[in-house]
Length: 73
Image 1 (cartoon, one colour):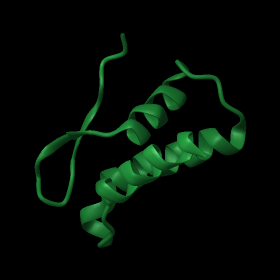
Image 2 (image 1 turned 135 degrees about the vertical axis):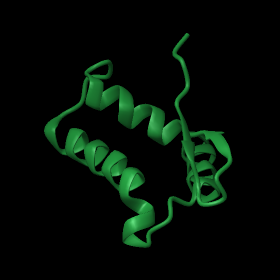
Image 3 (image 1 turned 45 degrees about the vertical axis):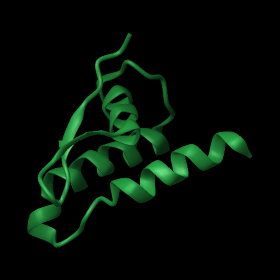
């Protein structure tokens, strides 16, 4: 079983985030992906690291809604 990553969202609570887990796995080479996906994953992780200085917010609730939606359809 893969260990889940945690991140600090804008309210500073630790939450499991499947999108960030996937991005981390791609960047580390655990998941195979093409160059466009690798770059998108690198950007996602970079955005998370710099979100407070750039005044952007990772909306975890919206990400989780999308993650639940797409497998259904």
